[in-house]
Image (cartoon, rainbow, N blue to C red; front, side, top):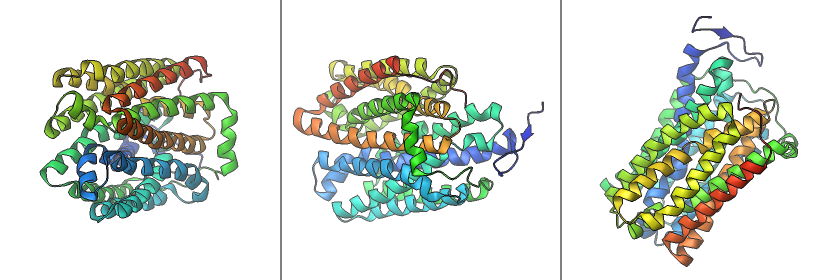
Length: 401
């Protein structure tokens, strides 16, 4: 069959071809990049944000917690509320909300305004992520769905490569407000790309909140969500405070930390595509490897990260393992509920972002109460718990979407 193979979309959407679908998939990937960059931006800017708004480092970390909590709640609620609206129009509207949130954060004169801005970011992020996660199968032929899903989720990994480190560099070269304003402008550019490149995407089916919640009755879905919760909570308990940890343990400067985060992110992109290929064959095996490697590397940073070199090696392995978490766990959930992709995606995004918020919160408590090194031990312990859940819980036979 020719490479430009087209098949009819039985949901009433456009005919799909790999060649025509690639620009649309790239636009959606740029949206996931922008929402994750927006969510994670405070990670590399906690110190200057705290200084400017006159709050402690732990309190500054709430900028991540608030966004995660709002995203966790908005994703499963927005999906039913969106009803039969065309998904292209919905994505564009949500990107507009994201842009406003970032621009408001750039202007914020005090922490209260920053909180309001981060609420808007959470609404836009949760909605975009929930919808984008299941779009690949609507934009390309079935044989290309796996690689297209990995490409969409590469936006998350690339956000670690370019988003968070770029925000750190912009914060050093200009200030943290300029970093937020830049991402707000990027959201507007992506909005335009989505409007131009996406075909009409009528809703596949009406999703009701009861239908979303009924997915908890599937043991495969429950196990997948448990693995998501444990891995992501552990990761963000540690990663949210990676800058103060590196400053304390390795004595790294802000410029060096930006470089280390760039190395981390490059490894994350590689991990995303490697995990996407592996999860298509066996989601359980893929997540067992990810959990084991993540647990070991995070826990070793306080012990072996005394030099910038060893810290860089550990961060590289950390990025390689965590880069596969999003696509690996999303593949698990979609394969567990292939007839309810948007509902499963909304649960995934809700749990994922709730875990981000919880991780940032407990990491802040650990950092303020027991020191920067404690957050790494906490993260490693939760990754071990995810390993146990993935090993003992029920999993889909394959990750075919």
